[in-house]
Image (cartoon, rainbow, N blue to C red; front, top):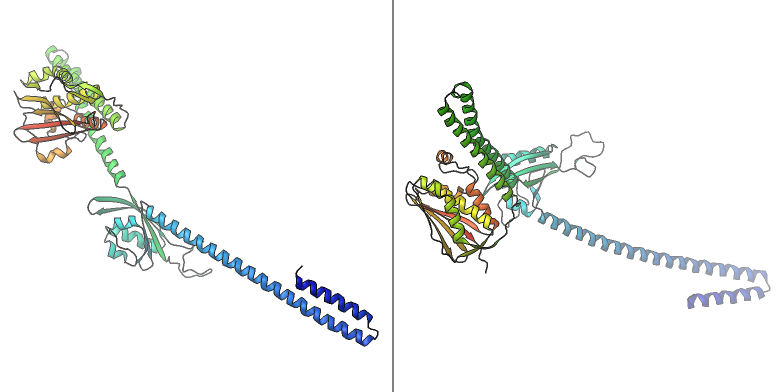
Length: 430
């Protein structure tokens, strides 16, 4: 109880006691009326003060709630801005006049704007691509578009999957349509999302090319096998000399198919990361000598000399089996595509990396083919490669094995003088 309230109660009690001692009735009546008026005044003032205090408390609560709401809105805005900026997909919002009202950095990159703003620009000012314009136009008519393929040709060719939706209210009705209105509803804007599918398209194209190449490579030996089996069945089975010749061709074609399937499985395992590389110190000269000895028959058949110039004390850090596989593919190619009575040289150089060099004296490779030489099934001379028994996968296998070691394989060539392939391997002391 406050001091003021205590004084008022004491004064009231004292006044009541005095009232009871007054003998005349009129005096008592006057005192009672006066006391009632004072009580009513005090009660009104008390309630008024209470209301003001309550209102002040409510106002303070409202101000506090407003501050909290503003803080929440600010935080949500920052979150939305961060989300927009972090999206890999391009986001573009246009109004009913086809003017950009919102966009994100991914959309800026899409339209080749390094730091500029897209806002307030018309869509036709940003792009002349009919697919983009048509999709946004349909969305402004209330038609959702998805799966729209968009290609851009800037510094590089990019492919996007575009989805555009009309901008409606939260209840699903367009923003300009009043409840119960019979007028046709028109969306007030459209939102488009550009999803980059360049890598997916590229992988799909590689897959299709791979299947096409595999089918083609298998069809050739299979056709030969079927043709000669049919010939043997009809007439040539009685002629032993012809039968032996046809059977040798069948055997050669079957071996080619087996080699091709083996290379495909090997390359698939390497690309999938299922091949473990166990690097260790390997004496290079003896390993190169073993590979040269294994290919001696092929070299002798074409009068080609294979020279091992690797110093006997050289050691490299690699997986012995995989290094032998790389050397076999490269030396075998150097023999196949060399000129008659040519020369193949295996040597070694040490710089920032260990370099194993395989040089031949063949006809060389035109410069325009060098960049694609390590692709699967890529051949400079397809007919000659098939005649030599090649699958078109050997150099691709070498490339992936070298990279699995943390190295690389490169090629230089000069027409009329030959080619030089280099396997680069990390040094153990690096």
